[in-house]
Length: 206
View 1 (cartoon, rainbow, N blue to C red):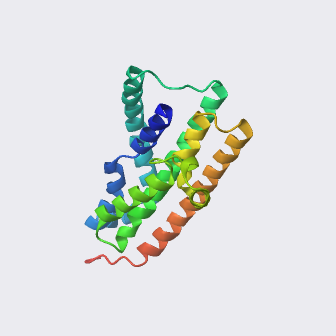
View 2: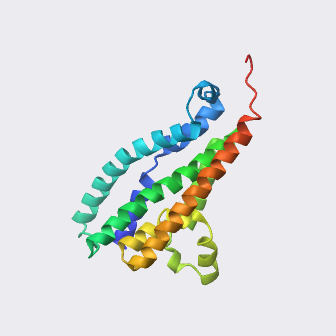
View 3: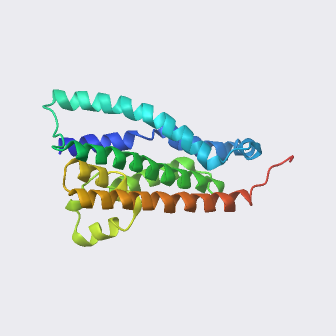
């Protein structure tokens, strides 16, 4: 359980509240109009910003949480180095899935002005369906099945299952493949929402 808690805190700290609200603030403040004039893809630029800050924030969080858990008696480590490599890949995929979800929720602010409420709702749904609050294996069978239909499990439950060696190598590779499938789906869904939103943007004076 200590290892699972470590992974939960690590994945939740990869994207900070500042990184999450930065996208919605650009939209609500009108700063997005300046981005529309730049020869940059808005989605790729936000991804670069978020991933860059997340790697730094995640590293600091991992060190702090790791030291705390070591003082509390240590945590379980994977027996195979190959498992740890798969975990790192899954963790990076987790970051991309969470970014896509955060980005899509941020784009909702083109239509809704209450960014804080939307962000809290996103956090509640994500934490519950990703297994951050309760491991999905503890869910009733019907609820576990529903949770695994959505991409949220790829944020916490999948990397945690790989780290704890609940999956064999073939199953781990399949789950990582499913993570990347959701990254592609969410990425293009976000691109579609963005293209739809900017066609409705009205910029006064221009």
